[in-house]
Length: 120
Image (tube, rainbow, N blue to C red; front, side, top):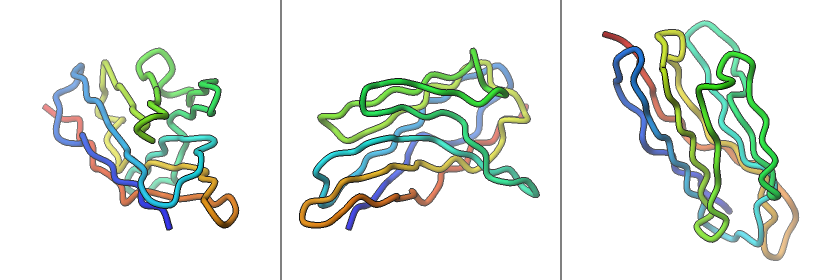
């Protein structure tokens, strides 16, 4: 089993910044793609950003130019730096990882989510 634990969410004013972290632990042999998704009330979950094991990144259109995804493979951790935050960025942010486990196969995992509220 693998666990993903997010941190760094909270209340921030419009134009502010936040840095989210997601640490993976458990029977991890390697981690392939890692990503951040978000879900706002009444809306579907959407991709915010993703990063491959080779650090190739992809961003959702609504956040391009304002967020940066990065990862520390030694710590099995992915980060999301968010700048110039807008009220429409308010959502629960979820970490996602494709994990190759020791003694078994490759599985997709989700974190429990961290709330981000952008409001004055």
